[in-house]
Length: 353
Image 1: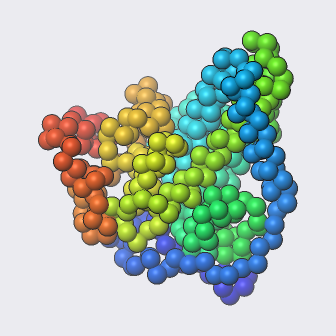
Image 2: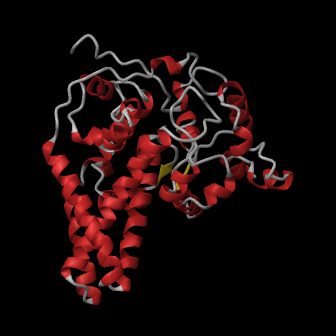
Image 3: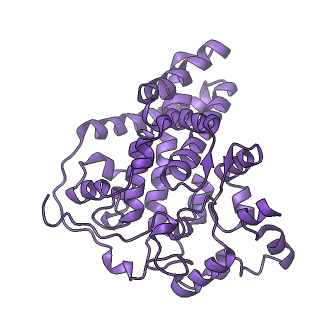
């Protein structure tokens, strides 16, 4: 391995990684952010695949308004929603950050929905995302935002991984993923669930045309799904506020949240093991992934949901935030004392109440 491939952690993954009472690192990680010049090796298959997806999706948008049946459009949205939850609750919160635990039926359901989303297999998704958090915005970050908006959005998938990224991935603890049979034994289902089923169902159940069925609930839905996830990696790392830790590139971006329903990224990178999208209870109740996890908890399928207490959040915001916490956190004047009393308890307190 070349000498330069020796990445230094710039972020935390789990509670056990923290070094300060307010759950951070005891160093200034802003000095670690970098993007050394590198020679890119293009992955031409991915480039041509992405080109096809976006051109075909443009035509799919035209078909949505001109010839598709309403059932097809509704079906495409529902499939997209399932995929988003499979990735947001499954690959992301359950398997990457271990922010809650799930019983086998829920794990299988999330695996199916994540597979339908076809954003790589769970193992590689979780490995790359753990690497992203551990070495955020350094040369070991797979989609380092220091390399520009396009690179962090989709350019990183158009080139081969650098030695630093590969080495960073090797240093990530992955035993829990290797030991999980739900994670490791389903790869052959990916093309069937993502491309075959969403095309066949509209044709046989409401007599949609093959072209509409292929381009709308399959190609257009898939292209929208990947761009939504990419937008969090790109736009939410460049635009917005940093009320919790100003040394981190990720930001709170309400526009990204409105489009992607995931956009409170400074909070997430500051406390990545928290299953919630934000400390704001109202916004959590408007986030489908969080609503789904809460519903599964009530049904007994999800348990041990991890949260960070308001006291720790406030301490961290005061120590490392950019001063905008009054716009995003509990000190927002729009929160009344009654609302704080009702929504400000942690999950563990709810369990013992």
